[in-house]
Image (cartoon, rainbow, N blue to C red):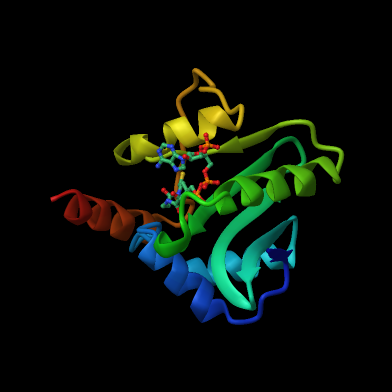
Length: 150
Ligand SMILES: CC(C)(COP(=O)(O)OP(=O)(O)OC[C@H]1O[C@@H](n2cnc3c(N)ncnc32)[C@H](O)[C@@H]1OP(=O)(O)O)[C@@H](O)C(=O)NCCC(=O)NCCS
């Protein structure tokens, strides 16, 4: 197993995340990858015999590290790849002298809580708030979310 941070085929990464049900219409994964790679982040990819089988985004905001879009090809899940990716994210963050790491679990994805708890992650006992800073996009996003939940 090889973990690299410069996998060039962005379309393959996005397709992997799509198959892991990680994409939502209000997020642009291609832009997210470019932004992460441009500053304070990376996209870590797992290759098995040169085949992409896992990918995640890691970054930091100067205070805490963060993991987004953690996904393992459904055909390769439950064989330790997710565990290896999270460890690689922790190493990436630790190497930047940042002592803590956050991640978000969508309410509808409670099934992965056991996975993260085994890796030592805990509930922050906080509510995560966010705001879309572009009012036009905020309106579109609200509609997309309403439609998604239907
Ligand atoms: C969550 C995910 C990344 C885990 O990857 P994985 O390669 O299957 O995980 P691993 O094989 O490294 O599993 C590590 C441990 O967690 C357990 N585990 C993995 N997925 C689990 C799940 N969904 N529920 C409960 N336990 C799980 C494994 O059994 C294993 O336990 P063990 O060490 O006692 O044997 C993968 O299931 C996935 O891509 N899911 C879809 C996308 C997703 O929901 N991502 C998380 C977004 S917050």
